[in-house]
Image (cartoon, rainbow, N blue to C red; front, top):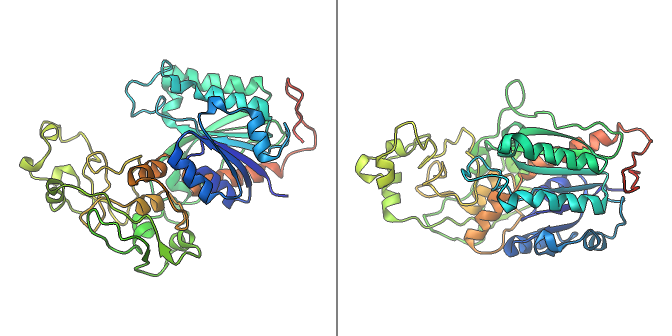
Length: 381
């Protein structure tokens, strides 16, 4: 039988997709965002989607949706909203109510009593409040009978064409070892996946263009393109944001690998005219086709990162961002264009999620037959 999973804070379903690719049967998901929920329900038809805030979702709700009893679920996965922990949020702290959402996740862990738990977040969580958030998470897992470890994983080391750092907590009630995936790409391994590996076969489009459903422009001549395309014959969500004339003029001066420093001084935004040359290293960056992308955010705004297409004078499309995140082409994002970018940027790269899921499957094969009982009497079978 397939291992089972439930995804909390599922968004569009990047982590669910990764676990599904590894062979898990994802039974249910929850998220508060309406557009992300529509995408999830469409792309994970085998799972029951429960919309709304996690505070309104009970363990019984999730068990009824999944058709399971307490202790039967193999793994509960999810990533509580990370803004309160992010190193990009200078006001982050335990005073932010979003920093308490992991406690809601723990409430469901207690009620569902899964054999494994996987929780993902940004790396800033390890430094906030002198590490007290991490200590609290570990203590909460221990209180419920889980051994837990965490590790920071680099997406590019697992075939994702993007520099992205995320911390994964893995806990278990079983006697299996806790394993994290071993690096698959990099020095002395298959080379890192490049931006051009990811987007080079997509048809060229103009600034602001929405061509609808389009055909591929080149064959799938790399492992990554073959993985991304699968059996797809057409491309969706290949829609570019419309940039103003001044940004189009700025882009004319930026070479591959270049940035705001290549823009003539009189064309720079007023705030950047006062910037030090050492500041804003990713702003107005044009991607290098032979490199990796900077972290895909919830909007690929060229003012904040290197999101200019390598060859075309425009920002990357929703589909290009999704490919850099390792979403397969059949995965269609619903909602407005703004909502689609948010769904892509918030997601765990499916390929990274897959590697984490595979590490759980490897660990499960090494477990012994003795169960571990928690304070509520659930037994990991």
